[in-house]
Image (tube, rainbow, N blue to C red; front, side, top):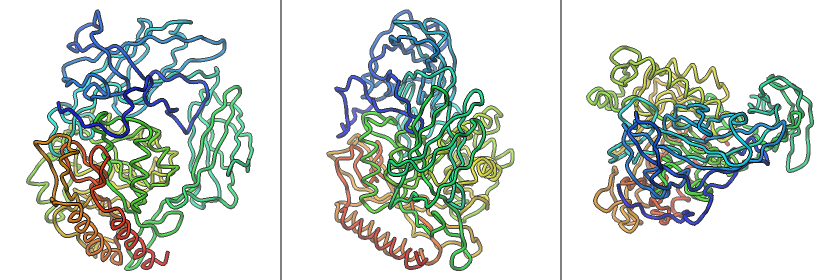
Length: 590
């Protein structure tokens, strides 16, 4: 395990880390954060719970990270046990909900010696009603976690037991906020919010255990513009006159207040659509709010040196997103990871379009020769036969069932965020199977967004656009015979090593190396101006550069891993991006 560099966002002295409200789109006032110091122990997974807890761990940071205070490897055969005590004062006619924002991978939860539930999956929030298991005063909470990391087919993103190159240190156990919430007997469970294609109304569903009337108030610039009484559990269309649209340049958000009986929550939504339309040469182009849009942004792995996949602070999220906007970008690709809800909240309010990947599972690079041939000659490789299932480790029904269940959970979980404009179920063939069927499934669940059915490799000729990855060689023109929109969803990966800001000094990884900030800046700006810009008039709809920051031994970020050094000249990069966007505007009359 490497000793990580510190970042400017560390909050080592905070008693309660990540103390901001974890669910901005369904906000209540009465809640308690359970982050902070917990007891922990590691045992062989088939043993009984430990008789004693041998150390302290700072939740919600993974055991492998320095922010946890532990920084130890966790083996697939082990079981990680957590314990903490908390006090509550129970109120009549109130329920107490225990929330976990994310635990990787499989966990059992106990309260006062009683098992209250289990959860499988490393990226989606889950919760338990603990009212009947809790007592006034002190309560004992225990959590037991197992995590096979890359020895299994579960969704794991870029986690590897032996990280190297593009693979990173695992994240095991609790890695996002744990919290309590008090609600009435009848309460709002969730909201589903979808703007209309015509941008003249919004469809809202208030989800609750039993149907009841609820009141909804919509505010624009803090002024009430609409009040209605609507039934829960039924979609209800509410007109929005003269809407202020959500765009990266003006990311306007409407506020909402919803009341169901004694329950009251605050939320927000954005009015925006994402679609396709025919451009020059009858090729599809991206449309935001029925206006041509070019997507320009970085690939974002979502890792930090001291805290792994967990943001070290809210400020760390804001820094990453604002830094990309400051460079003149309008998009970010969240790469094979699902972030905390606060990350998407900040993307919503700051104004970045998000390409959201599904965390990959199964097997990556299943057949090296077939992969190389498919990439080199743009060959179509079937992903729907027995050979493909076996190669991608999807020949197990449990593997495909869990993947599709978690994919559906992601679509529901993140549906309301206006920043998300594209879903991406598969990246570079990792665990890929039946991509055309999966594409249709995603579109049927969420027709309001575009879908990148197979990012980078093994395109199946479907999806809303052609998605390619290009490193080291010159960027290619879109095919004349394929009229789908054309997105270069990964490219660049240019490297500059700053030895004062490396994860470790003995190894680095990247595609093409440069010796100075000037050299790197010149190469990047040349890439934009001599390769990207000429493709715009040929139908290019967007580019995603690798990547936002260095990650572990990867040194191809705009920023160093600790975010202390911008490795390119900001003014020159911004000017090249300005030229790119102007070319697009001139080409499509925006």
